[in-house]
Amino acid sequence: MKEQTLVLIKPDGLKKSLTGNILTRLSETKLDIVGTKIVQVSKELAEAHYCHLKDKPFFPELIHYIMGDYHKKKVMALVYWGEDAIGKVRSICGETNPEKADSVSIRGAYGRITTNGVYENVIHASENSKEAEREIKLWFQPDEIIISNIYPTEEIEKTIKARRWK
Ligand code: IDP
Ligand code: MG
Image (cartoon, rainbow, N blue to C red; front, side, top):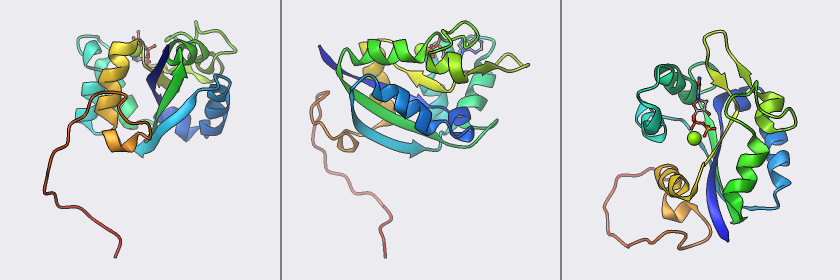
């Protein structure tokens, strides 16, 4: 089944100049990139993204980490699309704990655990299709993804103040 998944190259991945290596590893999946952007992660976005972990003792550190307080204040967000996208990407990423992850996986090769116990595991990938939908809708607007109708949309009229090139 063709499906979509959210990938984030986390601030440690960007700081360590691992973007190219990580994208090369992900290209082994032969999936299509259908959306991408660089994001400065707000506290609100960080907390919404990791809302399922809000009661964990490491939650405050995790929010600092994903906001880039320990590395660079940016994250590269991508949507990958294709056959079994969620499983293929998760398998190349490896286990959550970078010390336990297979050493040929992205997290096994590039991740570490800090002395404060933060898992700096360089990449995020959606766990299942429900989470992928929630996360893609959180990080991307419909028009930022080149395939239409991955999820239902509606047209609205809105008046907003925006910047444009002079
Ligand atoms: P996942 O990223 O493999 O889906 P989740 O359980 O959803 O794993 O956790 C989200 C992120 O929170 C992890 O990628 C990692 O950065 C961090 N994390 C998860 N468990 C721990 C832990 O036990 N200690 C420290 N950080 C953790
Ligand atoms: Mg997860």
